[in-house]
Length: 422
Image (cartoon, rainbow, N blue to C red; front, side):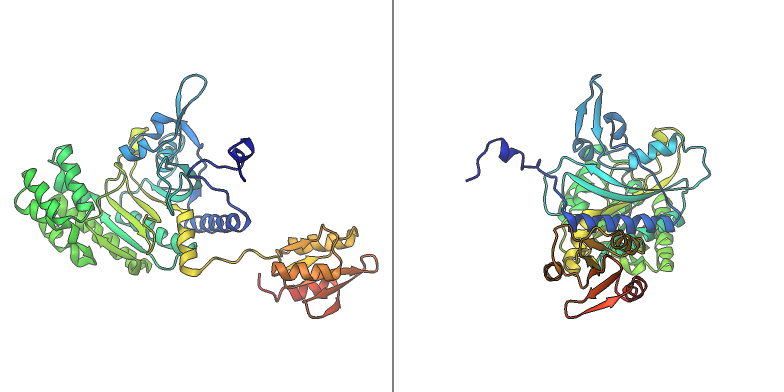
């Protein structure tokens, strides 16, 4: 029977974190590598900010919920530090500082751990990996469209097949609610976010919102679909009409990117971090209660650290994306070695194994002292299709596919392995 003694404690992990064992670790590293390569092909350069900073710095621009979720602690000088809960504020600080003299726009990306003190649930941990991009120094629909199109490519790049990007325009909502006091604004936003039409009507009445502004705000939860949902906002004119026109331009560019089929316009998309000022978007997938990615335009954040710069970006939760991918496609197979080699101390044998690895093949050399039959049995259990054993002091070799053995030279072995699936 297990006790609550010290040995039991050594086997426990804090709530909300998890070990990744070889198969899961390999899947995550492959996803990270795929995203890093994708971001590079779109001309984004990687940044590596520190894992923790002064808490007051990381809280800049963050809403109260995310600021409350930060892990805070004290250093020996009594300064309050925090683990990052998001990358965007750190990128904003870096862009406004030592990178401020670089030619614009800046295309920046990142991959790393973030930490949030939240109640763990499926697809929601207290430590998770976030990958994302920030396009800094461009205030155009083209910049917005590039980032949303890259978000689509990122989800497809990690194997998520069934998803949708919900694209809203916070500038439109802000223009409609700019005269409301904070309490009324929060109530209106909550009612729209919950798609509660009856509650929305009541809070609009209580706030004294009337006429055309009330009519459009009351319709926002229902304005979901294609460009046709923008007609009423475009006809409204003024700042509201300009925000709707901007969103339409972004959508048309996304169609040109070939990403339009993944995007749905949603004027009821009004949630998000407080620093968003323009478009906002979320990537959602069936069966997961949380967004796989989220992003938007934040033209006011970087100026809080120095030189004001427009910016737009997104962050993707890698573990969430892999959870969706696994559910949609079944668990990905582990990276099984191509070849199991019988262990020996011959220099030529070890050199051959190393050469095959340098050619890009996964080679497992036995370190348990198995004989040939045991090696073939071990390979069968591991799903390894071929085994290799040496003869004559490491001057010749036998290749087995589990049914027959045959002599093979190093060059013939390499030539045959090139026909195998990598």
